Length: 244
Image (cartoon, rainbow, N blue to C red; front, side, top):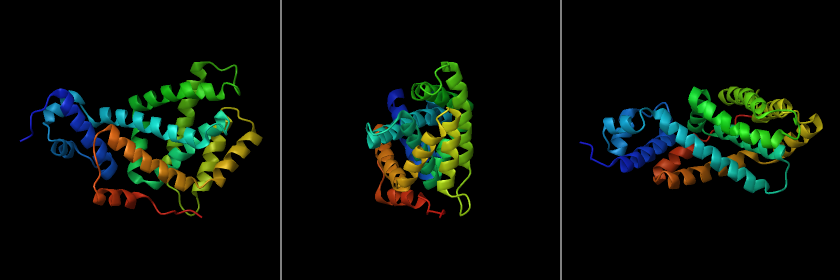
């Protein structure tokens, strides 16, 4: 029998269980029964607080975006243009999804869920306007929102297409970054310089470091811990490099 908890405690326990299970099992494989058993709450408590897994996914993605982008900012400090920072942030996001299948699934679920995708796009459009207004001074906030819908669609398509020996990670990043930066009218020589700089970085190691920091931040934020066996399991989800 599930124990009785007040609504705030039940919410905390559900969030903690869901985020941990999403990381370990994946979003789709985590069932309502899994969460209820792990959080030790009733199904009515879950439905009353969140309704579905989507509500939890929204909170999780919000936190993931905030933390991975802060990491990119710390890496570059003041040694970059706003366009370079955008390129590194999006490159890290794409590499993370290439390195960990469960995180790929979380990002794809978020980007293809109508309400969550709109939430992401509206938030991102504000940042996009600040970054690229120099290149597009005539554009309104609405224009940047509409362009963000397009570039996030391109990103989703590339995230969903796994790399292989023909479509390498380097090619994926090159294609995506040139298309995205081009959409915001970054001059071609500047695009080339930005993409070249990112390709010279050990982007896989950077993404792995960001993932480890992200998992630690998630554990602290959502009040859970991972035992050694679970950490080993997560590490096995990091894909071997399948690109030349």
